[in-house]
Length: 479
Ligand code: UN1
Picture 1 (cartoon, rainbow, N blue to C red):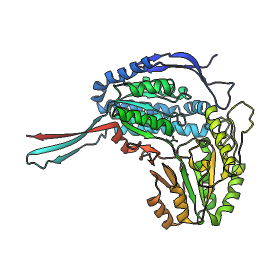
Picture 2: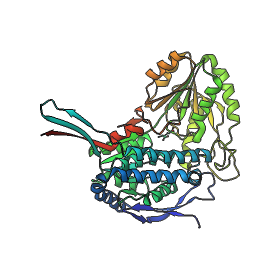
Picture 3: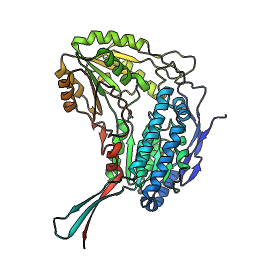
Picture 4: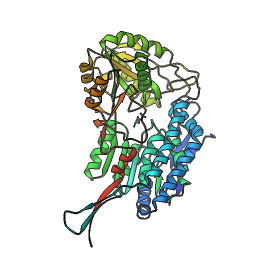
């Protein structure tokens, strides 16, 4: 076995961890990406202790130093985006173009927060009392636990690690178990960036052991999580029990409304991108396509024609549009929902099964069902390339269907009507709204997050990240 073996990083040291777990390549199960060792609860405790010990000095470190560290990390990621993208494509399965784009996004996020480290905001006000000044300043929240998902194994860790460090926090980062290679690559760059030991730690292993030990540790001050609704809810209850500051990004069941006045070719591109690119494995995916009756039949014909052109296969092949599903467990979930679609009486319009490829991998055809709003595929997050198409009588009906979900991450509309676009932006019950754009694919410098069951706590990204990663102090001074 010549593949790399990925290890954890604690207090400035690489820690092997136990066992030799396979880091799978979902496009070729016979050619693994590498192996990795997992930590036990005691080692995770050491990581949190190291982060706590490093906190006093780092929280007072010169903002210029923090800026330089983050700028170094951003520059190196950008310079190596092809290589890192290749690793990401092999490990997670999104296409090489998507993977390189994600690596670049991760680099840009570090650059953005390098700047933010020098712009930590504060206010000075007059007091209600004469001769007294009031200052409102921001201080680091403390030791931040980061639990990240597998679907953006570079960008999501970047948008949590970078602001945590920019604002003077120390970090224990727990990546998703199936993407240890990307986590290791990030940690390796951070290990050479000039951080004092213990400021950044990375712990490999399962949620049950490593995630639990992290969340239960008394020295943890804050937890930022992106992942599934059940895991997020369980963590939220645990965090509430010990008054941990939390930021939770969970599921989505994002609607894309297509009105009769839309540019239909543009709408089909938005739908295909939003529903199927990145193999549908985005919490921002357009998994409910809600189409006005007057253009429904034409939309179906165009979607079927466009979907027939989509090539599923090896993510490193430039001709391929859709890579494999990331894991056997996710593939089982996706196939289960395809069965549920049939059981609930939805009509299969495209796809519906596995795709044969020369290598042994988790290949699934992009799948479209004509469904009812009550069907399971219309209500539950699938997290795969499976979308439900719903027919709406008119705009008001489409808006009602769009909001008829427990989730509220992103909502999209394709229309040429200023009146409908404006109304939708105001009335969509979602944290993000897209007009004539796919629901997925967000900018890194503006807030990211949702409402209802999708999110809990302050927004991520952009200048709004300061809210979660700092705590406010109000100081009164009399001369
Ligand atoms: C995007 O759509 O560009 O897990 C980002 C996710 C989201 C990120 C989506 N947190 O899919």
